[in-house]
Image 1 (cartoon, rainbow, N blue to C red):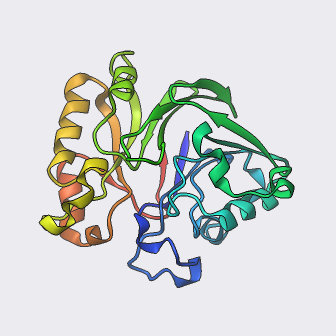
Image 2 (cartoon, rainbow, N blue to C red; image 1 turned 135 degrees about the horizontal axis):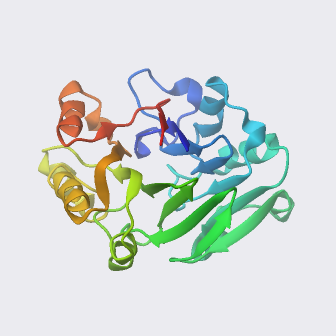
Length: 258
């Protein structure tokens, strides 16, 4: 399974187009899997993919985690839709489907696939599980993607694990080859503690890593990847902190194979 990170940051760049992104800034978080499956469509995602030479016509499926504007931008989504060879399958939580604000004409260009928490299904050669995220009031989802014996956890926007989510990833005895973990609030500044309840932070992140490894969910060879990294985390000290936890600090354009 090939992972291409089209964005690794938080909401700081959500209003910017690709040409407005400064060299030291992160784009909003988006992930491309095996050239045809996309997770989240923030504003810069399509233009940056084009800049990287991605064949955007190959996209068959788009998964949305939730409708916050740093994860879903209608203009960018429609760029992906119009570039695709065929109709794109759009997978999103049933309770947020109406919030997509797509017209009837625009909806005719996609296969809208509303899903519920804990749904399991097969698509694009993958087995997918939709898990409830701890991200207040927006019905956010995390995802498990399994293909060719490899298993990926996508867990951006959410602090710790909801009981249902933990029951699935631990109680089912699963082991992961890679896990993308929310790493939003890694500042020591207490002023930034406001959304600690729904994003991982400097104090919680090492506990998450220790729990995943201690429980066997993350094994010796599991790639633990820090994503959704806040704007205060672009300095060398912060990246070294992520590395000290045994994690890979994701960056825009990073390619990983699992």
